[in-house]
Length: 141
Image 1 (cartoon, helix red, strand yellow):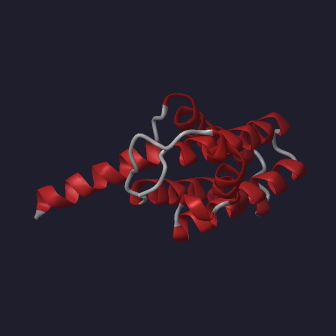
Image 2 (image 1 turned 180 degrees about the vertical axis):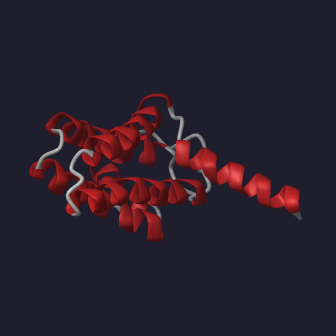
């Protein structure tokens, strides 16, 4: 399992970057920053949130200052959440690259809401989608 505080801290870092993209609006700097955020979701989607730069910062800077977690959680839902973040921000980047710069603040805004919910109240939208998908698959079996 993983320390559940790690993805929350990582979501906080990500939310700050996404807020900057929203504030920059439909501009080239926003496109570049959203591309950086999208790429930062890639290792999390492939290997899990511990593989991201946010996970590295959590382990190196934050975790040593905290006590042991009360419990560990399944890494699969946060990994799926990373994939959702990659898709949402990736669509924004692709649309920006083809000239639809207006899509940048929208994609960043959607991803910001999800990241901010995770960071502030612990509601991981991607994790909930993962759980919902598992339930739907079981109900069909």
